[in-house]
Image (cartoon, rainbow, N blue to C red; front, top):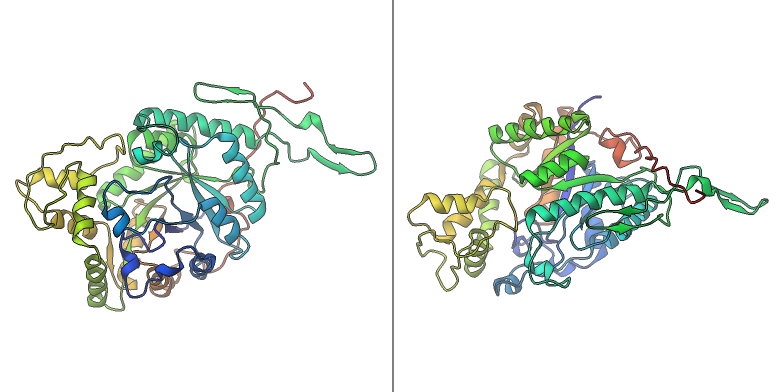
Length: 445
């Protein structure tokens, strides 16, 4: 199989990957609930021949701090509804929706994703998350989140149930024979009758297998539990953007885990984030990065840093120096590396602005189209990534700049496609149509 760079167009905040990217002069915050806004985003990604859209999501409104309401653009459509609408406007690109296994039920998820796969002609994907915040628990009957490890145990069983439900029907089970009056062959319908620790689901599913058999499964997260779930079940993992050497170690380690689960590592893709700031010159790109960083109000800087390091800094200036003394345990939200806590702990005195700016700088790639293409190519050829989830800091201009300046250079180097060829998203990821598993329990039996 020829190895080809994979690209996803990532969107969480409609204003862009930077929390106040909506304030940039090119942004269009008045359109964040307009289907045409998202259709334009999808068409720009298709112009760049991206493999998939990737819509992140959360089941909460982040109002832990006042700035989350005052300054932070969080309103967004529900992703499955949005992607179903986009499937008829963008005819080629994949459609990946983020869905939580902690605050959903397998039957609903299996049915919704199978429906999207049928509607789109085989382009559906599921970004599996276990959710992170207590704010989500409070919207679903609880006061606090499940323990991190238990969330992933539930997630593993959730995937098992969904896969069983997707395999309820054989591909030739529907007869639709008007003459005989037989609509379906009951010997080709199996009932999962799943009884596990977290779920009891009889089934069968009331929709047949989609064009892909199973939609592509993404799993986001870098914790040991997240890596284990991804290695065992996922087709691709979405992860952070560390140094080149760290990325190579992560890549090799996760591929090794995939092998340990008896799976083919060449059919498992690792796609780190890529937050590009693209300019026609390096100076122009640097200026743009500073403009975007400067859009963040001081109150949001202080409260965002407070949240990430587990220390209440509210009431302080963004430039007031403080000693790291966390008073909130944030470990249950995520077990992935927390660079801000690490940096704060390494300094006797630090300011919120310094931590905020450093994390901004370390998470963006600044340069011309050629310079960014160089970084992408290096990480791909050095086996630090199989592709990237491109997170534009401000939308729509960030994605447009990437498509206009970086994509032609990647295409010139033969790294990315120049046209859509395969029909389904699984095919683009080098995956065959998912075979149907036999659970040996049929309706007729």
